[in-house]
Amino acid sequence: MKEQYAPYRITDLEEAERPRERLARLGPKVLSNAELMAILLRVGVPGENAVQVGQRLLQDMGGLVGLHRATYEEVCAHHGVGPAKAAQIKAAIELGRRLTIEKPEERPAIHSPDDAANLVKYEMSALEQEELRVMLLDTRNRVTGVVNIYRGSLNSSQVRVGELFKHTVRRSAAAILVLHNHPSGATRSI
Image 1 (cartoon, rainbow, N blue to C red):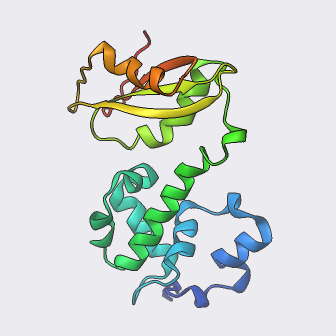
Image 2: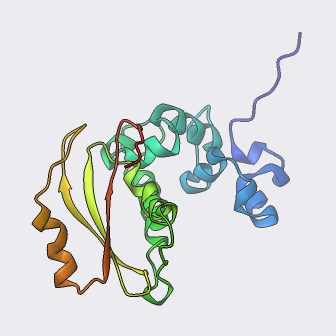
């Protein structure tokens, strides 16, 4: 019985199936997470191509959320990912976070609780402790800043009421929204 040949180098794949070429031809949305990771990793290790290393990294870290939560050192510790590749991965994640707050003139406006949640859930979902934040808004309900007020434990956070309003007054915010996460993933409505 003949064994199926599994390519272990990107160059073993047909050119049309290589991640960079597929991204150039079809756009990034069609690539799997492992293929996007392979573009950042660039090369694999003996016996595993970059896509396979990316897939293993994602599996070991608990997917994109786990990779987002992981420290630089934890990413470095994986076979096939050294300091340079770990730095590239963490930099890409940070660029994605910064994308939501790039231009002041394009600040998002908050019209519903979902609008506020969508702005912070990417970053706050990666937190391992409860945090309490204040989102500062201008007179048109555009976000002027998000301030971390308190970091609590795994399942609690307490804060003085005065801390909530200190930044509001200092930055002349017209309104605030109080935000906090649940590292356990549990959600509650108040």
